Length: 272
Image 1 (cartoon, rainbow, N blue to C red):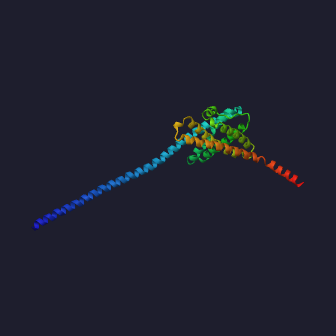
Image 2 (cartoon, rainbow, N blue to C red; image 1 turned 45 degrees about the horizontal axis):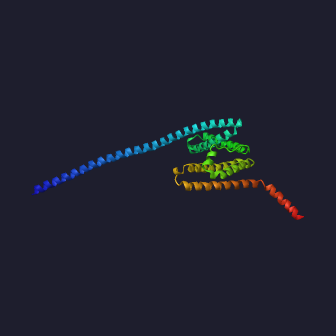
Image 3 (tube, rainbow, N blue to C red; image 1 turned 180 degrees about the vertical axis):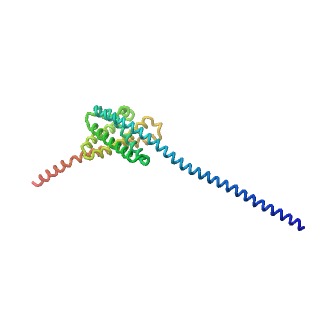
């Protein structure tokens, strides 16, 4: 009886030792697995961070090369623009100038985004040249638009009136105000600032006008065509009134001497 109990106890002890050893082996196995995973994971994280930085640097390099290409093309266009100016080919000058100004804006914006990746002196040179060219072109456009014999340029004007005849009175009035305002700006002391503001407003108008024509031409190809056309038409009508008011204000600014002299004459007459 004692022998059996001893045998049974021995069997239990062996089983317990086996479980302990097995647990130890499993523990060692998972420790190695976890350690391996941590090493792999750490290596992957380090690679991911490095690769992300490398990708960002690679993307920046690509964008810088694209920026160089844009600057080169724009420089060529500006040289051609100077030839048109020298030869007094005004209509061609205006058409090309309206293509170059957005290009200069894009170059400025891209340079600003890439400022940290570009040498400081190069960044300053890019933005300075872009600003200088924009100001010179805007000033020349003002001079050309102020000429009364120069007609508005629009290759699609007849087609636009055919598609949307309801725009004709507003479009022509806006064009008349536009050229009258440019002429007044040319006489102002802060003409560069006023010209930039006016050109920005005219850019928004042309964007709305182009969208209106596209939707009106193929309304089935756009969502909520009727509502969007109505909104655009109301915006064009309001812009027409805004230009009328702008022109009135510019004209009133020239009437200060008139008002002062008139008031003085009235005061003299009343004093008699």
